Image 1 (cartoon, rainbow, N blue to C red):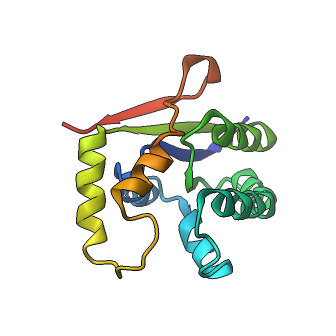
Image 2: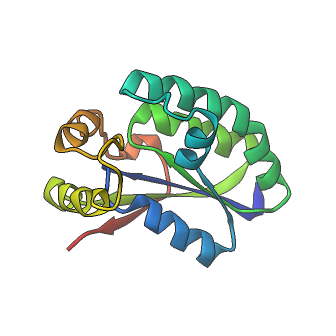
Length: 164
Protein backbone atom coordinates (compact mmCIF):
# COMPACT_ATOMS: atom_id res chain seq x y z
CA UNK A 1 0.00 0.00 0.00
CA UNK A 2 1.22 3.49 -0.84
CA UNK A 3 1.29 5.07 2.63
CA UNK A 4 2.18 8.58 1.52
CA UNK A 5 -1.06 9.32 -0.33
CA UNK A 6 -4.69 9.15 0.65
CA UNK A 7 -7.94 9.23 -1.32
CA UNK A 8 -10.53 11.36 0.46
CA UNK A 9 -14.14 11.44 -0.69
CA UNK A 10 -17.51 12.44 0.66
CA UNK A 11 -21.05 11.29 1.25
CA UNK A 12 -24.00 13.37 2.34
CA UNK A 13 -27.33 14.68 1.18
CA UNK A 14 -27.62 17.55 -1.27
CA UNK A 15 -26.66 20.87 0.41
CA UNK A 16 -25.33 19.16 3.53
CA UNK A 17 -21.98 20.95 3.30
CA UNK A 18 -19.86 18.43 1.37
CA UNK A 19 -18.19 20.94 -0.95
CA UNK A 20 -17.22 23.27 1.88
CA UNK A 21 -15.80 20.31 3.79
CA UNK A 22 -13.94 19.11 0.67
CA UNK A 23 -12.23 22.49 0.36
CA UNK A 24 -11.24 22.41 4.04
CA UNK A 25 -9.93 18.85 3.78
CA UNK A 26 -7.86 19.64 0.69
CA UNK A 27 -6.20 22.54 2.51
CA UNK A 28 -5.63 20.55 5.69
CA UNK A 29 -4.25 17.51 3.84
CA UNK A 30 -2.30 19.54 1.26
CA UNK A 31 -4.18 17.51 -1.34
CA UNK A 32 -5.37 18.07 -4.89
CA UNK A 33 -9.07 18.92 -4.92
CA UNK A 34 -11.10 17.74 -7.90
CA UNK A 35 -14.66 19.08 -8.05
CA UNK A 36 -17.03 17.16 -10.28
CA UNK A 37 -19.52 20.02 -10.72
CA UNK A 38 -16.80 22.34 -12.07
CA UNK A 39 -15.76 19.81 -14.70
CA UNK A 40 -19.33 18.95 -15.67
CA UNK A 41 -20.22 22.63 -16.04
CA UNK A 42 -17.14 23.28 -18.20
CA UNK A 43 -17.48 20.19 -20.38
CA UNK A 44 -21.25 19.93 -20.67
CA UNK A 45 -22.69 23.46 -20.27
CA UNK A 46 -26.48 23.47 -20.07
CA UNK A 47 -26.62 19.73 -20.91
CA UNK A 48 -27.38 18.44 -17.41
CA UNK A 49 -31.05 19.18 -17.00
CA UNK A 50 -32.23 16.04 -15.20
CA UNK A 51 -30.92 13.08 -13.19
CA UNK A 52 -30.38 10.72 -16.18
CA UNK A 53 -28.32 13.40 -17.97
CA UNK A 54 -26.27 13.90 -14.81
CA UNK A 55 -25.65 10.16 -14.43
CA UNK A 56 -24.57 9.76 -18.05
CA UNK A 57 -22.11 12.64 -18.05
CA UNK A 58 -20.83 11.92 -14.56
CA UNK A 59 -20.08 8.34 -15.60
CA UNK A 60 -18.12 9.56 -18.62
CA UNK A 61 -16.15 11.95 -16.44
CA UNK A 62 -15.27 9.18 -13.97
CA UNK A 63 -13.97 6.93 -16.74
CA UNK A 64 -11.79 9.76 -18.06
CA UNK A 65 -10.47 10.80 -14.65
CA UNK A 66 -9.80 7.41 -13.03
CA UNK A 67 -6.32 6.85 -14.54
CA UNK A 68 -5.26 10.39 -13.68
CA UNK A 69 -6.48 10.13 -10.10
CA UNK A 70 -4.63 6.84 -9.69
CA UNK A 71 -1.48 8.38 -11.20
CA UNK A 72 -1.57 11.22 -8.68
CA UNK A 73 -2.09 8.79 -5.82
CA UNK A 74 0.71 6.50 -7.02
CA UNK A 75 3.08 9.51 -7.03
CA UNK A 76 2.27 10.17 -3.37
CA UNK A 77 -0.19 13.01 -3.96
CA UNK A 78 -3.33 12.86 -1.84
CA UNK A 79 -6.58 13.61 -3.65
CA UNK A 80 -9.88 14.97 -2.34
CA UNK A 81 -12.73 14.09 -4.67
CA UNK A 82 -15.76 16.34 -4.44
CA UNK A 83 -17.74 13.78 -6.44
CA UNK A 84 -20.93 12.33 -4.98
CA UNK A 85 -20.61 9.17 -2.95
CA UNK A 86 -24.26 9.14 -1.96
CA UNK A 87 -25.21 5.64 -3.12
CA UNK A 88 -23.53 2.26 -2.88
CA UNK A 89 -23.17 2.30 -6.65
CA UNK A 90 -21.39 5.67 -6.60
CA UNK A 91 -19.11 4.52 -3.78
CA UNK A 92 -18.12 1.42 -5.77
CA UNK A 93 -16.12 3.74 -8.06
CA UNK A 94 -14.15 5.03 -5.07
CA UNK A 95 -13.49 1.43 -4.01
CA UNK A 96 -12.09 0.70 -7.48
CA UNK A 97 -9.76 3.70 -7.21
CA UNK A 98 -8.58 2.67 -3.75
CA UNK A 99 -7.82 -0.87 -4.87
CA UNK A 100 -6.23 0.17 -8.14
CA UNK A 101 -3.96 2.77 -6.54
CA UNK A 102 -3.46 0.73 -3.34
CA UNK A 103 -3.80 3.72 -1.05
CA UNK A 104 -5.39 4.58 2.25
CA UNK A 105 -8.71 6.40 2.19
CA UNK A 106 -11.25 8.34 4.20
CA UNK A 107 -14.96 8.59 3.48
CA UNK A 108 -16.25 11.75 5.12
CA UNK A 109 -19.95 11.35 5.84
CA UNK A 110 -21.74 14.65 6.37
CA UNK A 111 -24.79 13.62 8.36
CA UNK A 112 -27.36 16.40 8.23
CA UNK A 113 -31.12 16.34 8.57
CA UNK A 114 -33.39 17.11 5.65
CA UNK A 115 -34.40 20.35 7.39
CA UNK A 116 -30.77 21.53 7.65
CA UNK A 117 -30.10 20.62 4.02
CA UNK A 118 -33.24 22.36 2.75
CA UNK A 119 -32.33 25.47 4.74
CA UNK A 120 -28.78 25.50 3.37
CA UNK A 121 -30.06 24.88 -0.16
CA UNK A 122 -32.44 27.85 0.12
CA UNK A 123 -29.64 30.04 1.45
CA UNK A 124 -27.12 29.17 -1.28
CA UNK A 125 -29.80 29.40 -3.98
CA UNK A 126 -30.43 33.07 -3.14
CA UNK A 127 -27.23 34.05 -4.96
CA UNK A 128 -27.93 31.95 -8.07
CA UNK A 129 -29.94 32.95 -11.13
CA UNK A 130 -33.60 31.92 -11.11
CA UNK A 131 -32.90 29.44 -13.92
CA UNK A 132 -30.10 27.65 -12.03
CA UNK A 133 -30.68 23.90 -11.76
CA UNK A 134 -30.86 21.87 -8.56
CA UNK A 135 -32.11 24.68 -6.35
CA UNK A 136 -35.68 23.79 -5.45
CA UNK A 137 -37.26 21.71 -2.73
CA UNK A 138 -38.51 19.39 -5.48
CA UNK A 139 -34.92 18.94 -6.73
CA UNK A 140 -33.83 18.16 -3.17
CA UNK A 141 -36.59 15.57 -2.77
CA UNK A 142 -35.83 13.91 -6.12
CA UNK A 143 -32.10 13.61 -5.44
CA UNK A 144 -32.39 12.71 -1.76
CA UNK A 145 -34.68 9.80 -2.66
CA UNK A 146 -31.56 7.99 -3.92
CA UNK A 147 -29.40 8.72 -0.85
CA UNK A 148 -27.91 5.72 1.00
CA UNK A 149 -25.70 6.33 4.02
CA UNK A 150 -22.49 4.28 4.12
CA UNK A 151 -22.91 0.76 5.49
CA UNK A 152 -20.45 -1.32 7.48
CA UNK A 153 -20.32 -4.02 4.80
CA UNK A 154 -18.78 -1.48 2.39
CA UNK A 155 -15.70 -1.45 4.65
CA UNK A 156 -14.77 2.19 4.22
CA UNK A 157 -12.84 4.25 6.77
CA UNK A 158 -15.74 6.54 7.63
CA UNK A 159 -15.24 9.90 9.33
CA UNK A 160 -18.62 11.19 10.45
CA UNK A 161 -19.51 14.89 10.58
CA UNK A 162 -22.83 15.67 12.28
CA UNK A 163 -24.72 18.95 12.07
CA UNK A 164 -26.00 20.13 15.47
